Length: 122
Image 1 (spheres, helix red, strand yellow):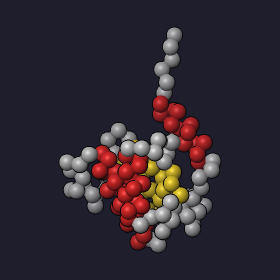
Image 2 (cartoon, one colour; image 1 turned 90 degrees about the vertical axis):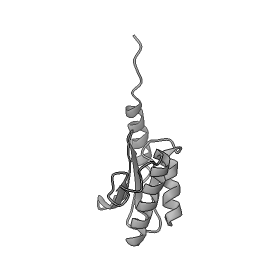
Image 3 (cartoon, one colour; image 1 turned 30 degrees about the horizontal axis):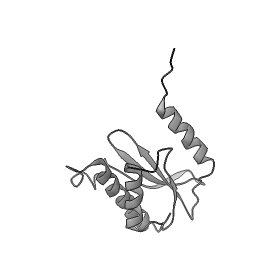
């Protein structure tokens, strides 16, 4: 019998392997990305205190009107810009990027470009 590959389990395994190395501190917090089939979420986390400093997603009230009639990649770019602006308001200029086990392409790449354009360095 042929077993079907569970891609989400593989992604979680990749994510845990990366998380062994990527750690957010107060000076350089971690920009974590989660991508579902319809939405994308980003949050900046200080792993030393286990606290979320700021977050944004396609479900954010600030973006609700502007996301209509946009592609998922364009939406991800706008989420990246929003999380970058929120981070800069809190005085965060540099982060470490945690792509969550996803490939750095498509929506994940667009989110990263949006955050960089807003002024975050990683």
